[in-house]
Length: 252
Image 1 (tube, one colour):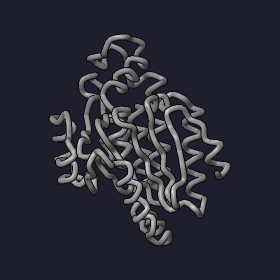
Image 2: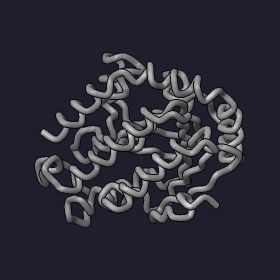
Image 3: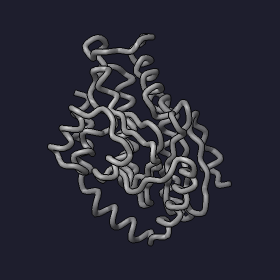
């Protein structure tokens, strides 16, 4: 095993290299990565190492079913505000001023920038419920694959907080500003079929062999010329300054 793989130890995340595809699996405690600075730095270092390793052609992120859903998100929000019961209004706990929120913003900015600027193909395989911050994060991937039970949940609204994960930055780039506003303000859940119709995911695979299907698809895509991938992404990611300004605004 490569040293940078064996050295990677982050709670809630496992990694393996499978025929040129770095497979990253998110597990039960993945929300802890927002507030754990060491974990964040290890994760960023992992992406850097993959980007500079000629044996890696693509990076595939997969989530354990339920780990990005409403229940762990609610626990994370409660942990941020220091309460045992769900928070209903932002005014009750100053979400935007919390240290935890600032750390979450840093995580999303660094990871989105790394993924967009990566020389390798970045693929997300998403299953089950995926709440707002990871919905936004997923839109920084080059390709998104969905299980047939995927649901993007805009769960932030029930806590009276704004969309995080860069969602309000990325979503209009896919569906246009008007449709993005409609989704952000009036939609609670986007199912897999609707996500496919909106162009938010590229393909839907059955639940029963979802992980295998994603890995096989990633291996197929990894056969593309690395030069083609790198050049295409470099020309496409021409809004780095806009992304930086967006996250700066979110802290104000």
